[in-house]
Length: 491
Image 1 (cartoon, rainbow, N blue to C red):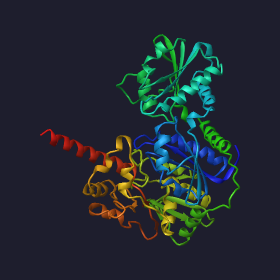
Image 2 (cartoon, helix red, strand yellow):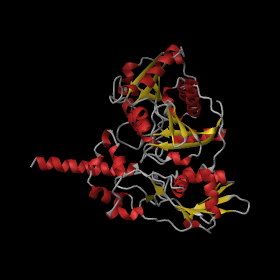
Image 3 (cartoon, rainbow, N blue to C red):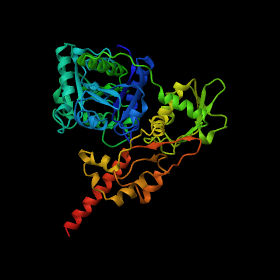
Image 4 (cartoon, rainbow, N blue to C red):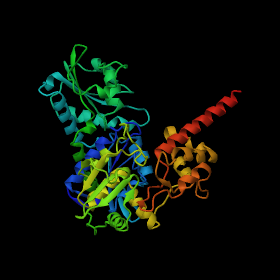
């Protein structure tokens, strides 16, 4: 892999508001690539988690940005949602003085074949391939014909590669050939099943094992039962070897880099390295020097040796704190609240206490703060320079598609009430910068959230666009409106 030390890499994942496992592989692959030092900056963004795709640009200074979708197929999300949310107009987009390059999703790269073979070997070691059927499982959908193409391509490559399996087939949860029919689709005494998903979650922990017959639909959560650790499973007179999702394979980081390399090859890219631009880090140093030593629920102490120590503001001055030493530890500190519940919203006032994070230098500090409060530093800097563009609520709701396409039918009064409730300071520490529409500011219950709410010694937490929680709340109101109208029509 050629070094791109002049450029930033942004890895885009789906994420989840309920499942912490969804974004974990994307973060781990980003950390793996970051440690190799191939890019000047490496960041993640998500459809359902923070930072979202509109905010992530505030996390990087580089003038050249590569975007790699950590998605399996070249379907609905990669062709429609991601380009829309990332404001892309083709493989290469020029905007705000930056060159943005949109690579293909990882799942369609030919090198996925190597990962599938390796995963099969890991899950069923010493099992003769000539006595083994390999089943690659996907979701399947009628929404986009490309959703199954990535799996079909991999099946064809493995068959053509003569890897020695008795047979290689594709199967799906929601379209034929169905996973539930595995016993009639295969003939070998051993069957290796590899879910072709980015992350382990409900599909791999619960849905597919039930479809295979490994578990009943009722019972303990399969994520707690070690479903991947009890191979083989005896089913219908055969041995089933069940694997974790392919996207959790550590070598996926190499496939991400492969897509960057292939983009350069395909488009004849040969950049001349630009002068390094560290504006976000410089702003952070300036703020600390000016006495801004808080952000959200975090206190920042500058030590005599120019290192830094972070803790919860309520723990400042306390001893007996659990000490961490790497910026990446911030990701795990911020993931769960005191009760152990997942925190999909980083700016919720529920940050756990009892820890201290000691960091060697300003680079580590910046990275840790981006894990705690994604894009917060970049947005605060852009606001100071009057370069931060907020997106009106109506514009965000108006661009929604699929199951969210009706969200913009809520009334203005409903929008103001919804923001006042969903975004209340007790739920989110950000200050809203966006208006209702281009000419109408937020009013009523939402007004409180548009006012500065941070301490004089704190870097502000800002919101430039309504998040997925707001869109979901708007969908609920819009659905209630529709149901009320239908009931009224029915008399």
